[in-house]
Length: 328
Image (cartoon, rainbow, N blue to C red):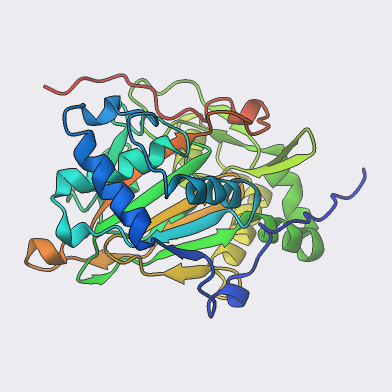
């Protein structure tokens, strides 16, 4: 069998090479900020989730959002957009601004079984013994993973009193390192693991998916350890030693200080990440006693309007989480 070829492209980067650079932080200009604030006011009569790109006019900001989309899709795979004036806006205005920016990048997807398109990420103090807890609802460390969308946007409304840094790693660099140093790990990772959806309302039959996969010559990565491990337990098929070692190898490099890029998102920052090329994580955090010290992130899962990503069968469900529940 022919050995895999290393991935070549700008999304194969090392955190050690970027940690002293800030060219991945794109700061809004005065005219771009004015665009955003005006569009928020102009759409006050429209329900937030009904706002379209045409409704949310951004004449000065739109060209840079096109560049941002290209950088996330075809470049390094991530950008931090800085400068949303959240301290000068009501929370609902911030949500509207974030949604409006998203309409210029793609269309929003459901993030949970309730069909929420704009997700809120904070410590809900959920019972950790819940059958299928979503890690983002806690203040715990989150393992490196990808989300079920082309792109994820994460806006920092308020950061925590302590901790909560976001960490990202290039799955393409991890792939290249495994080819060189751990070729035995690529077999299990490309053969695949059982998988169950993150919110198993009905717990569909687990299906098998590879962590790394090529479609039309385009390499993609998909990984959610929690869903993977639950699926193997539910199916009564424990991971083999070989399969487990392959995942440990992946995690080792994702977490390695030479590979990962840590960032503390500031209030008003938006982090955009390509789910096929970059894995992301979060450090544990501690909230303070006041709202100003309580971590609150807002999230969008988005798919591109056009020029779809080449998806193999294992990415056929990268269209968000199906709505299956209604709130009382």
